[in-house]
Length: 117
Image (cartoon, rainbow, N blue to C red; front, side, top):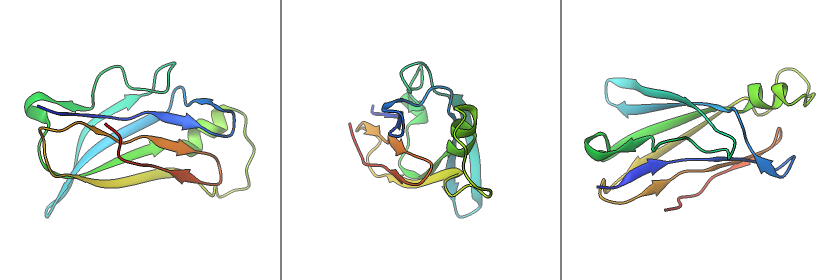
């Protein structure tokens, strides 16, 4: 079985995003279901995979990163409302047997992601 993982890189400071709140949702025709809430560790990663084993299923998902709150906690001053606040990454898992790594590279003004392994 595959697994789903993520991490956060703060490109403003050139370091891992420590203490970023993340929620994982499964999305289907009936709406969204919250699967879990996590907080990144000292390496900007989650301590365990977000999905693995029988939890890892094909389908549509969303990761919601509380980037604006993270930057505020770092003392970064930005105008209100925040340009980058909650970052919502909508993605699909086509093959639950593969590893899906969905990182967030973020600043108060931009963000990027990619599918890693």
